[in-house]
View 1 (spheres, rainbow, N blue to C red):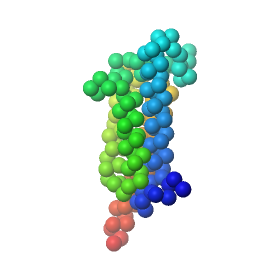
View 2 (cartoon, one colour; view 1 turned 30 degrees about the vertical axis):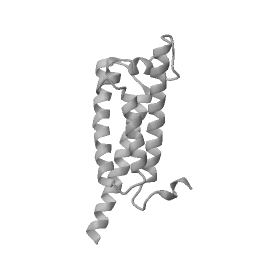
View 3 (cartoon, helix red, strand yellow; view 1 turned 90 degrees about the vertical axis):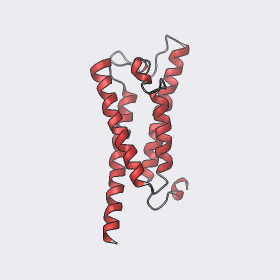
View 4 (cartoon, rainbow, N blue to C red; view 1 turned 30 degrees about the horizontal axis):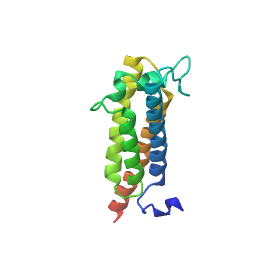
Length: 149
């Protein structure tokens, strides 16, 4: 019932990735908030060999305008969710490319600079790659369809 409103050129998979990314971003925001009010807070994603909390609270957790990367992610994934209902394939693909470029930069910071691992971050990278692949396929189908007309 929910997905019957997706336009013929819309993408249920884009909507699903948007929801998954939004949930991951909201969890990251929750961890940031909990660790801010409770310095001893340990998130479910914190183990002896990795710490999402340490990554989210690092100086790199608020790169653009001092706003949490997780907040930017929540806004981005919400936008992608709604774009999944539309036929704006080129815009959706362009945003997916930008998100993957951002993921590469953040993955480098995570591994090379912070020297930690974050399963929530890595999961968002997977969502971003999925968005890229899904929307590239949509774009390719659209181009093929237009050439045949």
